[in-house]
Length: 424
Image (tube, rainbow, N blue to C red; front, side):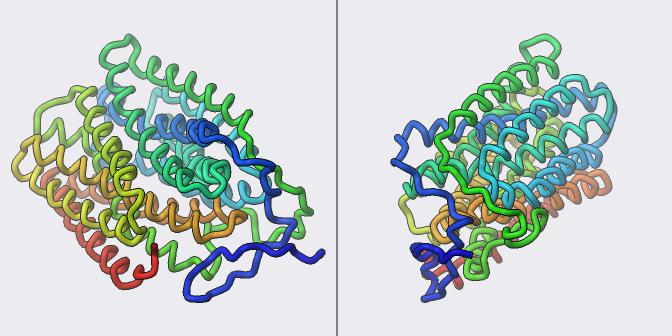
């Protein structure tokens, strides 16, 4: 193998060096720095896919009435999404780092379009689970290849991780309110919602086609290190960075996952409303908060951002417990907003840390590892709570969930406080 060119260090952790990636694995340097508008354009496919990821939320009540299933089955349908997402993360990040962002994003958008078709015509729980599974696969590609594409085009500017992270939460917030409004005002609600989303995905395909991404050299498959399908990971020197990000991001996204999966049931059971626009607006407010928090804290040290995430998640779970015991709207809204703040800050802190410390040739896989850890917890806890709520009641089940996430948030903040002293 020819001698590698000198590469700048990718880790600043107490003198720990990481062997530079061989020249054959590094992308060619860009011929010029793309304008800022290209970074914004690059974020659109992530937004479009994440609109789909949560568009089903206000429609669960429609499907429950039409098909007939309980809270436990509802959380299993949500878990099918997490299974698809985690499955995609075992190969999407590696493939994106090796063959480029576009060859991963284009199939992901086509899979998302297939999911729209199934959602629009779903006659059974199995069909809904299949659509959620495909949605998870597309989302897994978006959080690895899509977010890495944004930071690649940003070429080291801090705007890259910020837009990659806010694209995810903004899309996740737009999806429920768009679906809620359309399903309340348009005929054939499930068909209309996903027809509109399909149009958005087609525009995202057009954006991907024109992305000014750096060209990647082709190499023989045998020279590529490691398997193509594997649990996403980071280089040994960056494991602490990943752990710090997960300490805040995982509890935060678990709190928002609860609002998405069982929020409509809480609104119906505790507050007596089944209006789909209200459920969508609650989710939108949650993710707008996540977006706003990221812009508000973007200039702070990463350690501070991660600690803000832990504090917000802890406060959010406390508000959730108060909401289920008082059956009042105020604490439930506060719980959603604080959960959004917890996820947004934890996600921004984790992505910023990884994009700064991990080599570009492992960036998509690092993003995949962060999201795999977060979504694994976010998938398991709401499913367990859904079945627990069926057994002991919604209020008791939500209380147990809130206490569990609160304990994780406290533990994560302690890890950041003790181990994150040098994260600037």
